[in-house]
Image (cartoon, rainbow, N blue to C red; front, side):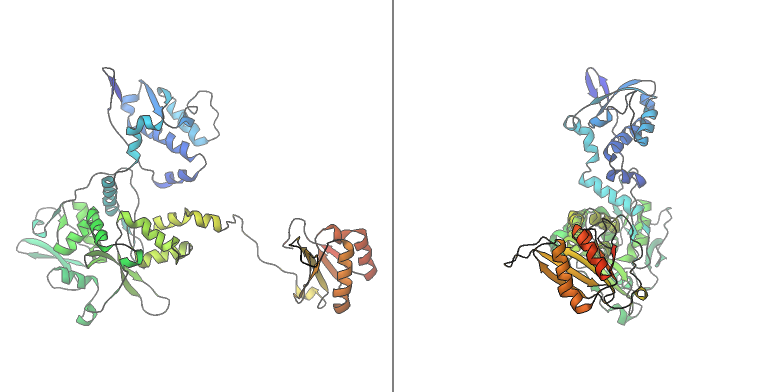
Length: 470
């Protein structure tokens, strides 16, 4: 902004999306500060012609950044330190303003619905085919988004000088000086019916009439009338529907090529744009299903149905992606499904996370044991709820050879109780073991217990401290 006659006048507006590795800053501890500082660095680079060798004021709603640009700051964040060094070449003063006072600036990061539709156009232009199994389209966000014309033109107007590359599976045909495109699999003139037959891959009359499996909108609890209306409000869906129904193409040359290339993967059923998804089966032939193309407003509903719904039961990432693939489609669906599962609070609370890797499972070799009850393991559980007989502990004995378990309720865990139970209930029926394994509880290592082991010739061994898995 520039002050003119005592009033602030806007020179230019600018906004930027996070792309590539920049998106990783969102989940970092200092991510908010890094994002805010990167916005300042990017803006000063963009408007360097206005700011170079000029003294200016910098206003930010992120108060933590005000100290970063101080000469004596000692931040431990290397990224912020580098940016602060770069900005030190400019002459400016930093002032903090609350977000409500500069809402016209903060509003640039709150995309309006029409701007989101423009993003969908950009996604369509930059989409790349990524999988042979279902020929999905992956989307990479761009630095800037330009408005893309939404108008369409009929095929008869394509006789100009602009060269168009036909899509795979489409043949360019000259008729009366005008160009049109038809399927290589069906030489019939282009009509909605023939286009649909070609998309279904029917070379013969019998195959063309064979039905394909479809994913119904009722599965998501969506109203069909509203769903169709929302599809009509999405520009790229509108362009694809116009091409499939009437053969009209967008005015934008690049977008026109993308529509032609991707048209064989879409079909219209009962007024709804559907995506052809090819699924491979482990046993039996592969099959093709039709899934609805989901508008932006219903993506959250579909993800909830495929992951958080009662019948989905918060399945893992693989099952959630497979469920979305079989029921819906939109550009960048796999990326959004991964993010939805990762950000699910219910899964975060209920599913544990182990950052370390366990080693190979090991157990004591059986050949070192002379037979049953040669190695006996003893441990205790409790205190539990006191029973009518006054017992509130359970004393467990496990044979390491046969994994035979015996448990006895006891009132206390003192050494006398342990020795009495072991003599009366274990040794009297199974004999004296060669070794006895236990933790370092006082009832197992007391002097009375040590004399008991020596009298019977039992070798006492102990488990690792603070490691109950021994």
